[in-house]
Length: 435
Image: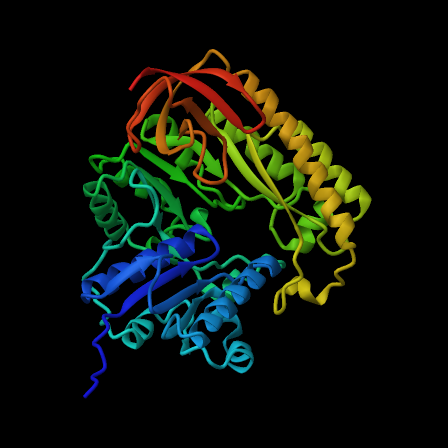
Protein backbone atom coordinates (compact mmCIF):
# COMPACT_ATOMS: atom_id res chain seq x y z
CA UNK A 1 0.00 0.00 0.00
CA UNK A 2 1.41 3.44 -0.97
CA UNK A 3 1.39 6.09 1.69
CA UNK A 4 1.71 9.80 1.09
CA UNK A 5 5.13 11.01 2.19
CA UNK A 6 5.07 13.49 5.04
CA UNK A 7 6.80 16.34 3.26
CA UNK A 8 8.09 19.08 5.56
CA UNK A 9 6.81 22.49 4.50
CA UNK A 10 9.33 25.21 3.78
CA UNK A 11 8.09 28.81 3.52
CA UNK A 12 9.82 31.04 0.99
CA UNK A 13 9.31 34.79 1.60
CA UNK A 14 9.80 36.94 -1.52
CA UNK A 15 10.20 40.70 -0.93
CA UNK A 16 9.48 43.43 -3.47
CA UNK A 17 9.68 47.20 -3.04
CA UNK A 18 11.27 49.39 -0.41
CA UNK A 19 13.18 48.95 2.85
CA UNK A 20 9.89 49.13 4.79
CA UNK A 21 8.86 45.91 3.03
CA UNK A 22 12.24 44.33 3.78
CA UNK A 23 11.61 45.10 7.45
CA UNK A 24 8.06 43.67 7.34
CA UNK A 25 9.33 40.46 5.71
CA UNK A 26 11.99 40.11 8.42
CA UNK A 27 9.34 40.48 11.15
CA UNK A 28 7.14 37.88 9.40
CA UNK A 29 10.08 35.47 9.15
CA UNK A 30 10.97 36.01 12.82
CA UNK A 31 7.39 35.17 13.82
CA UNK A 32 7.37 32.05 11.61
CA UNK A 33 10.66 30.82 13.03
CA UNK A 34 9.37 31.36 16.60
CA UNK A 35 6.46 29.05 15.69
CA UNK A 36 8.94 26.38 14.59
CA UNK A 37 8.48 26.92 10.85
CA UNK A 38 11.18 26.30 8.27
CA UNK A 39 11.50 29.69 6.58
CA UNK A 40 13.83 31.19 3.97
CA UNK A 41 14.17 34.47 2.08
CA UNK A 42 14.01 34.21 -1.71
CA UNK A 43 15.13 30.59 -1.83
CA UNK A 44 13.26 27.40 -2.71
CA UNK A 45 10.19 26.54 -0.70
CA UNK A 46 6.92 24.73 -1.37
CA UNK A 47 4.89 27.53 0.30
CA UNK A 48 5.46 31.05 -1.03
CA UNK A 49 4.60 34.42 0.56
CA UNK A 50 5.00 37.39 -1.79
CA UNK A 51 5.36 40.74 -0.01
CA UNK A 52 4.27 43.15 -2.74
CA UNK A 53 4.78 46.83 -3.53
CA UNK A 54 1.95 48.98 -4.87
CA UNK A 55 3.58 52.41 -4.93
CA UNK A 56 3.92 53.29 -8.62
CA UNK A 57 3.16 51.60 -11.94
CA UNK A 58 6.56 49.90 -12.40
CA UNK A 59 6.41 48.46 -8.88
CA UNK A 60 2.84 47.26 -9.39
CA UNK A 61 3.80 45.55 -12.65
CA UNK A 62 6.75 43.82 -10.99
CA UNK A 63 4.49 42.62 -8.15
CA UNK A 64 1.83 41.28 -10.54
CA UNK A 65 4.44 39.57 -12.73
CA UNK A 66 5.95 37.91 -9.64
CA UNK A 67 2.51 36.66 -8.52
CA UNK A 68 1.83 35.26 -12.02
CA UNK A 69 5.26 33.62 -12.12
CA UNK A 70 4.58 31.76 -8.85
CA UNK A 71 1.03 30.88 -9.93
CA UNK A 72 2.59 29.17 -12.95
CA UNK A 73 4.93 27.29 -10.60
CA UNK A 74 1.91 26.26 -8.54
CA UNK A 75 0.17 25.02 -11.69
CA UNK A 76 3.31 23.09 -12.66
CA UNK A 77 3.43 21.48 -9.21
CA UNK A 78 6.68 23.19 -8.20
CA UNK A 79 5.03 24.97 -5.25
CA UNK A 80 1.96 23.97 -3.21
CA UNK A 81 0.60 27.28 -1.94
CA UNK A 82 1.00 30.99 -2.76
CA UNK A 83 0.00 33.78 -0.37
CA UNK A 84 0.17 37.49 -1.24
CA UNK A 85 0.64 40.31 1.28
CA UNK A 86 1.93 43.89 1.34
CA UNK A 87 0.98 47.17 -0.29
CA UNK A 88 -0.43 45.95 -3.62
CA UNK A 89 -2.62 43.49 -1.75
CA UNK A 90 -3.77 46.20 0.67
CA UNK A 91 -4.66 48.55 -2.14
CA UNK A 92 -6.16 46.24 -4.75
CA UNK A 93 -7.33 43.13 -2.89
CA UNK A 94 -10.82 42.91 -4.52
CA UNK A 95 -9.34 43.40 -8.04
CA UNK A 96 -6.59 40.84 -7.41
CA UNK A 97 -9.04 38.27 -6.04
CA UNK A 98 -11.06 38.68 -9.22
CA UNK A 99 -8.15 38.69 -11.68
CA UNK A 100 -5.88 36.08 -10.03
CA UNK A 101 -8.34 33.97 -8.01
CA UNK A 102 -6.12 30.89 -7.59
CA UNK A 103 -3.82 32.64 -5.09
CA UNK A 104 -4.49 30.85 -1.79
CA UNK A 105 -5.17 34.08 0.11
CA UNK A 106 -4.50 37.82 0.00
CA UNK A 107 -3.55 39.87 3.08
CA UNK A 108 -3.14 43.63 3.62
CA UNK A 109 -0.32 45.47 5.37
CA UNK A 110 -1.95 45.25 8.82
CA UNK A 111 -3.03 41.61 8.68
CA UNK A 112 0.12 39.88 9.95
CA UNK A 113 -1.74 37.78 12.59
CA UNK A 114 -4.18 36.48 9.92
CA UNK A 115 -1.33 35.70 7.52
CA UNK A 116 0.53 33.80 10.25
CA UNK A 117 -2.63 31.84 11.05
CA UNK A 118 -2.98 30.86 7.37
CA UNK A 119 0.63 29.62 7.53
CA UNK A 120 -0.10 27.57 10.65
CA UNK A 121 1.72 29.93 13.02
CA UNK A 122 0.68 32.06 15.99
CA UNK A 123 1.31 35.80 16.32
CA UNK A 124 3.54 36.28 19.35
CA UNK A 125 3.18 39.78 20.88
CA UNK A 126 6.21 39.27 23.10
CA UNK A 127 8.59 39.10 20.11
CA UNK A 128 9.58 42.79 20.13
CA UNK A 129 12.60 43.16 17.90
CA UNK A 130 12.84 39.49 16.97
CA UNK A 131 13.41 39.35 13.23
CA UNK A 132 15.32 37.27 10.75
CA UNK A 133 17.42 39.94 9.07
CA UNK A 134 18.01 39.57 5.33
CA UNK A 135 20.57 42.37 4.93
CA UNK A 136 24.35 41.86 5.31
CA UNK A 137 25.16 41.25 8.98
CA UNK A 138 26.65 44.70 9.60
CA UNK A 139 23.52 46.78 8.95
CA UNK A 140 19.79 46.53 9.48
CA UNK A 141 16.72 48.65 8.82
CA UNK A 142 14.87 49.82 11.92
CA UNK A 143 11.32 50.98 11.34
CA UNK A 144 10.38 53.63 13.92
CA UNK A 145 6.90 54.48 12.61
CA UNK A 146 4.25 53.20 10.22
CA UNK A 147 1.91 55.11 7.92
CA UNK A 148 1.72 58.79 7.02
CA UNK A 149 -0.52 61.78 7.81
CA UNK A 150 0.81 64.02 5.01
CA UNK A 151 -1.64 65.04 2.27
CA UNK A 152 0.79 64.87 -0.73
CA UNK A 153 -1.35 64.81 -3.87
CA UNK A 154 0.69 62.21 -5.80
CA UNK A 155 1.21 59.65 -3.06
CA UNK A 156 -0.77 56.46 -2.41
CA UNK A 157 1.13 55.46 0.75
CA UNK A 158 -1.61 56.55 3.21
CA UNK A 159 -4.03 54.33 1.23
CA UNK A 160 -1.77 51.34 1.79
CA UNK A 161 -0.13 52.04 5.14
CA UNK A 162 -2.73 54.09 7.00
CA UNK A 163 -2.23 56.98 9.42
CA UNK A 164 1.10 57.77 11.08
CA UNK A 165 1.80 55.58 14.11
CA UNK A 166 5.07 55.98 16.02
CA UNK A 167 6.72 53.04 17.80
CA UNK A 168 7.48 53.95 21.45
CA UNK A 169 11.11 54.86 22.18
CA UNK A 170 11.59 51.95 24.63
CA UNK A 171 10.44 49.41 22.00
CA UNK A 172 12.76 50.87 19.35
CA UNK A 173 15.66 50.67 21.84
CA UNK A 174 14.87 47.00 22.70
CA UNK A 175 14.93 46.18 18.99
CA UNK A 176 18.21 48.06 18.51
CA UNK A 177 19.78 46.15 21.43
CA UNK A 178 18.71 42.83 19.94
CA UNK A 179 20.16 43.79 16.56
CA UNK A 180 23.43 44.90 18.21
CA UNK A 181 23.63 41.55 20.02
CA UNK A 182 23.51 39.84 16.60
CA UNK A 183 26.48 41.89 15.39
CA UNK A 184 24.64 44.70 13.60
CA UNK A 185 26.79 47.85 13.64
CA UNK A 186 24.68 50.25 11.57
CA UNK A 187 21.02 51.11 12.09
CA UNK A 188 19.15 52.69 9.20
CA UNK A 189 16.11 54.41 10.68
CA UNK A 190 13.14 54.24 8.33
CA UNK A 191 9.55 55.45 8.32
CA UNK A 192 7.23 57.01 5.78
CA UNK A 193 8.06 60.25 7.62
CA UNK A 194 10.79 60.51 10.29
CA UNK A 195 10.01 64.21 10.81
CA UNK A 196 6.63 63.37 12.35
CA UNK A 197 8.05 60.83 14.81
CA UNK A 198 6.54 61.08 18.29
CA UNK A 199 3.78 63.60 17.59
CA UNK A 200 1.07 60.98 18.10
CA UNK A 201 2.61 59.46 21.25
CA UNK A 202 4.38 62.35 22.97
CA UNK A 203 2.51 65.36 21.51
CA UNK A 204 5.79 66.70 20.13
CA UNK A 205 8.30 65.80 17.42
CA UNK A 206 10.61 63.48 19.31
CA UNK A 207 13.20 62.20 16.85
CA UNK A 208 16.06 63.90 18.73
CA UNK A 209 15.09 62.16 21.98
CA UNK A 210 14.93 58.81 20.19
CA UNK A 211 18.43 59.37 18.79
CA UNK A 212 19.73 60.26 22.27
CA UNK A 213 18.43 56.88 23.47
CA UNK A 214 19.80 54.90 20.50
CA UNK A 215 23.36 56.27 20.72
CA UNK A 216 23.60 54.59 24.15
CA UNK A 217 23.14 51.11 22.61
CA UNK A 218 26.47 49.29 22.84
CA UNK A 219 27.81 47.82 19.62
CA UNK A 220 26.01 50.25 17.33
CA UNK A 221 28.53 52.48 15.57
CA UNK A 222 26.45 54.25 12.91
CA UNK A 223 22.84 55.51 12.94
CA UNK A 224 21.49 56.77 9.61
CA UNK A 225 18.32 58.79 8.95
CA UNK A 226 16.09 57.96 5.99
CA UNK A 227 12.96 59.65 4.65
CA UNK A 228 12.50 62.92 6.52
CA UNK A 229 9.77 65.31 5.36
CA UNK A 230 10.94 68.94 4.91
CA UNK A 231 7.91 70.69 6.44
CA UNK A 232 8.20 70.92 10.22
CA UNK A 233 11.64 69.29 10.37
CA UNK A 234 12.75 69.18 14.06
CA UNK A 235 15.97 71.22 14.02
CA UNK A 236 17.11 69.83 17.41
CA UNK A 237 17.98 66.65 15.46
CA UNK A 238 20.86 68.55 13.83
CA UNK A 239 22.31 69.49 17.21
CA UNK A 240 22.33 65.79 18.21
CA UNK A 241 23.81 64.84 14.82
CA UNK A 242 26.63 67.33 15.33
CA UNK A 243 27.33 66.22 18.90
CA UNK A 244 27.03 62.45 18.63
CA UNK A 245 29.68 60.71 16.48
CA UNK A 246 27.45 57.62 16.08
CA UNK A 247 24.86 59.57 14.09
CA UNK A 248 25.95 59.72 10.46
CA UNK A 249 26.18 63.20 8.98
CA UNK A 250 23.61 62.09 6.43
CA UNK A 251 19.97 62.90 5.81
CA UNK A 252 17.59 61.49 3.22
CA UNK A 253 14.96 64.19 2.65
CA UNK A 254 12.76 63.69 -0.44
CA UNK A 255 11.92 67.20 -1.74
CA UNK A 256 10.04 66.11 -4.94
CA UNK A 257 10.10 69.52 -6.72
CA UNK A 258 10.96 73.18 -6.23
CA UNK A 259 8.69 75.22 -8.52
CA UNK A 260 6.16 76.98 -6.25
CA UNK A 261 3.29 76.18 -8.60
CA UNK A 262 4.10 72.45 -8.57
CA UNK A 263 4.79 72.36 -4.82
CA UNK A 264 1.38 73.92 -4.22
CA UNK A 265 -0.39 71.43 -6.48
CA UNK A 266 1.57 68.58 -4.84
CA UNK A 267 0.28 69.84 -1.45
CA UNK A 268 3.77 69.81 0.03
CA UNK A 269 3.12 72.68 2.44
CA UNK A 270 6.29 74.56 1.52
CA UNK A 271 7.82 76.92 -1.06
CA UNK A 272 11.07 77.23 -2.98
CA UNK A 273 12.24 79.97 -0.62
CA UNK A 274 11.48 77.97 2.55
CA UNK A 275 13.07 74.80 1.17
CA UNK A 276 16.23 76.59 0.06
CA UNK A 277 16.52 78.25 3.48
CA UNK A 278 16.02 74.89 5.22
CA UNK A 279 18.90 73.36 3.26
CA UNK A 280 21.12 76.37 4.11
CA UNK A 281 20.22 75.89 7.78
CA UNK A 282 21.15 72.18 7.53
CA UNK A 283 24.54 73.00 6.04
CA UNK A 284 25.20 75.72 8.62
CA UNK A 285 24.31 73.41 11.52
CA UNK A 286 26.20 70.34 10.21
CA UNK A 287 28.85 71.65 7.77
CA UNK A 288 29.93 68.27 6.38
CA UNK A 289 26.42 66.81 6.06
CA UNK A 290 25.55 64.71 3.02
CA UNK A 291 22.02 65.40 1.80
CA UNK A 292 20.19 62.85 -0.33
CA UNK A 293 16.98 63.87 -2.07
CA UNK A 294 14.55 62.52 -4.64
CA UNK A 295 12.66 64.50 -7.26
CA UNK A 296 9.62 63.88 -9.46
CA UNK A 297 9.43 65.24 -13.01
CA UNK A 298 6.41 65.20 -15.30
CA UNK A 299 3.84 65.93 -12.59
CA UNK A 300 0.47 67.10 -14.07
CA UNK A 301 0.74 70.68 -15.29
CA UNK A 302 4.57 70.78 -15.09
CA UNK A 303 5.48 73.36 -17.73
CA UNK A 304 8.84 73.81 -19.40
CA UNK A 305 9.30 76.83 -17.11
CA UNK A 306 8.61 74.73 -13.97
CA UNK A 307 11.12 72.17 -15.18
CA UNK A 308 13.78 74.83 -15.91
CA UNK A 309 13.33 76.23 -12.38
CA UNK A 310 13.92 72.72 -11.00
CA UNK A 311 16.91 72.08 -13.27
CA UNK A 312 18.68 75.35 -12.38
CA UNK A 313 18.01 74.77 -8.69
CA UNK A 314 19.57 71.28 -8.85
CA UNK A 315 22.67 72.86 -10.41
CA UNK A 316 22.79 75.51 -7.70
CA UNK A 317 22.18 73.25 -4.69
CA UNK A 318 24.80 70.63 -5.60
CA UNK A 319 23.23 67.77 -3.66
CA UNK A 320 25.68 65.04 -2.71
CA UNK A 321 23.08 62.37 -3.58
CA UNK A 322 20.01 62.67 -5.79
CA UNK A 323 17.53 60.39 -7.52
CA UNK A 324 14.97 61.52 -10.09
CA UNK A 325 11.75 59.70 -11.01
CA UNK A 326 9.02 60.22 -13.56
CA UNK A 327 5.52 60.95 -12.25
CA UNK A 328 3.19 57.96 -11.96
CA UNK A 329 -0.58 58.66 -12.18
CA UNK A 330 -2.05 56.76 -9.22
CA UNK A 331 -5.75 55.98 -8.68
CA UNK A 332 -7.43 57.40 -5.58
CA UNK A 333 -4.76 60.04 -5.04
CA UNK A 334 -5.64 63.74 -5.16
CA UNK A 335 -3.51 64.25 -8.29
CA UNK A 336 -5.46 61.55 -10.13
CA UNK A 337 -8.19 64.15 -10.76
CA UNK A 338 -5.64 66.20 -12.72
CA UNK A 339 -4.81 65.47 -16.32
CA UNK A 340 -1.61 63.43 -16.71
CA UNK A 341 -0.61 65.85 -19.46
CA UNK A 342 3.18 65.57 -19.71
CA UNK A 343 4.03 63.02 -22.45
CA UNK A 344 5.97 59.96 -21.29
CA UNK A 345 8.95 60.75 -23.54
CA UNK A 346 9.14 64.31 -22.11
CA UNK A 347 9.02 62.92 -18.55
CA UNK A 348 11.84 60.51 -19.37
CA UNK A 349 13.96 63.16 -21.12
CA UNK A 350 13.61 65.48 -18.12
CA UNK A 351 14.55 62.73 -15.65
CA UNK A 352 17.57 61.77 -17.78
CA UNK A 353 18.76 65.37 -17.99
CA UNK A 354 18.49 65.87 -14.21
CA UNK A 355 20.47 62.67 -13.64
CA UNK A 356 23.15 63.76 -16.12
CA UNK A 357 23.54 67.05 -14.22
CA UNK A 358 23.71 65.11 -10.95
CA UNK A 359 26.27 62.70 -12.38
CA UNK A 360 28.58 65.64 -13.16
CA UNK A 361 28.05 67.16 -9.69
CA UNK A 362 28.76 63.78 -8.08
CA UNK A 363 31.93 63.37 -10.15
CA UNK A 364 33.18 66.82 -9.11
CA UNK A 365 32.42 66.22 -5.43
CA UNK A 366 34.13 62.82 -5.62
CA UNK A 367 37.27 64.28 -7.22
CA UNK A 368 37.66 66.47 -4.14
CA UNK A 369 37.84 63.32 -1.99
CA UNK A 370 41.01 62.00 -3.67
CA UNK A 371 43.80 61.90 -1.08
CA UNK A 372 41.38 62.10 1.86
CA UNK A 373 40.95 59.37 4.47
CA UNK A 374 37.58 57.92 5.52
CA UNK A 375 36.20 55.31 7.87
CA UNK A 376 34.33 52.74 5.78
CA UNK A 377 32.29 49.66 6.56
CA UNK A 378 32.84 46.66 4.30
CA UNK A 379 29.50 45.29 3.07
CA UNK A 380 30.65 42.51 0.75
CA UNK A 381 33.26 41.11 -1.63
CA UNK A 382 32.45 41.31 -5.33
CA UNK A 383 34.90 39.93 -7.91
CA UNK A 384 38.34 41.37 -7.15
CA UNK A 385 37.02 44.11 -4.88
CA UNK A 386 35.89 44.54 -1.32
CA UNK A 387 32.93 46.92 -1.47
CA UNK A 388 32.45 49.39 1.37
CA UNK A 389 30.67 52.64 2.24
CA UNK A 390 31.49 55.82 4.12
CA UNK A 391 29.09 57.32 6.65
CA UNK A 392 27.89 59.52 3.77
CA UNK A 393 26.48 56.58 1.82
CA UNK A 394 23.48 54.36 2.32
CA UNK A 395 23.35 50.77 1.00
CA UNK A 396 22.00 50.12 -2.52
CA UNK A 397 21.35 53.76 -3.43
CA UNK A 398 24.59 55.69 -2.86
CA UNK A 399 28.28 55.71 -3.71
CA UNK A 400 30.50 52.76 -2.89
CA UNK A 401 34.18 52.48 -2.03
CA UNK A 402 36.08 49.77 -3.94
CA UNK A 403 39.22 48.24 -2.44
CA UNK A 404 41.48 45.90 -4.45
CA UNK A 405 41.02 42.45 -2.89
CA UNK A 406 44.12 41.09 -4.64
CA UNK A 407 46.29 43.45 -2.54
CA UNK A 408 44.46 43.57 0.79
CA UNK A 409 42.29 41.27 2.86
CA UNK A 410 39.54 42.86 4.95
CA UNK A 411 36.81 41.10 6.86
CA UNK A 412 33.31 41.86 5.59
CA UNK A 413 31.11 43.51 8.17
CA UNK A 414 34.08 45.29 9.76
CA UNK A 415 35.26 48.89 9.62
CA UNK A 416 38.50 50.06 8.03
CA UNK A 417 40.26 53.39 7.51
CA UNK A 418 41.02 54.00 3.84
CA UNK A 419 42.61 56.62 1.63
CA UNK A 420 40.84 57.53 -1.62
CA UNK A 421 43.13 57.07 -4.64
CA UNK A 422 40.70 57.48 -7.56
CA UNK A 423 37.13 58.66 -8.10
CA UNK A 424 34.42 58.14 -10.72
CA UNK A 425 30.83 59.48 -10.92
CA UNK A 426 29.47 57.20 -8.23
CA UNK A 427 32.40 55.02 -7.11
CA UNK A 428 35.50 55.76 -5.07
CA UNK A 429 38.64 53.61 -5.21
CA UNK A 430 40.73 53.32 -2.08
CA UNK A 431 43.64 51.64 -0.35
CA UNK A 432 43.50 50.46 3.26
CA UNK A 433 45.45 52.38 5.91
CA UNK A 434 44.21 50.42 8.93
CA UNK A 435 41.75 47.54 9.19
